[in-house]
Length: 215
Image (cartoon, rainbow, N blue to C red):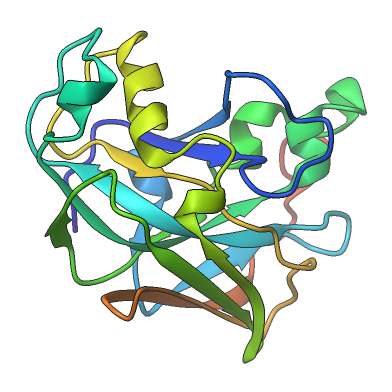
């Protein structure tokens, strides 16, 4: 498993009406959010509608200083692989204020980011094909050239705000599935080079209350 320090994700990369602008919709995850391919992802009960997305994932190989320009970013040492991320859109939108968990945990629950294998040395600027399956059905087949902000632009944008360190992980954006249910199987493949898979299971903690706390 990658020894990640920062784990970031991007939403609204494909086919979002009215999503003009240069600022990506970023979300934060944690090292504990990551699980290896072949594991399980846990979702709470019926009170929420968790979705998944398949991604091209970039893993930083060497330090990328702040304010690295796009032309230099093209030669940055990175590995790429496939990945899956989960999100609860209502939590992410914070439309119900304190009646639901906050945006921070909408993407950061343990097990909600699946890192594929193998890690393939590559260029962040290469165009890749990302195919995602939900329950054995192909639900997304997109090229990274159709992203609202391509990978090089994402990395350049991030470097304006933070230093990128070896092991930092970026889920570059995908197309959401329909809501998940226990027993579903998820898979994503990038160019036939890397693949990530996971089974959906119910959250094992008895008595979890989405409004906060435990009974």
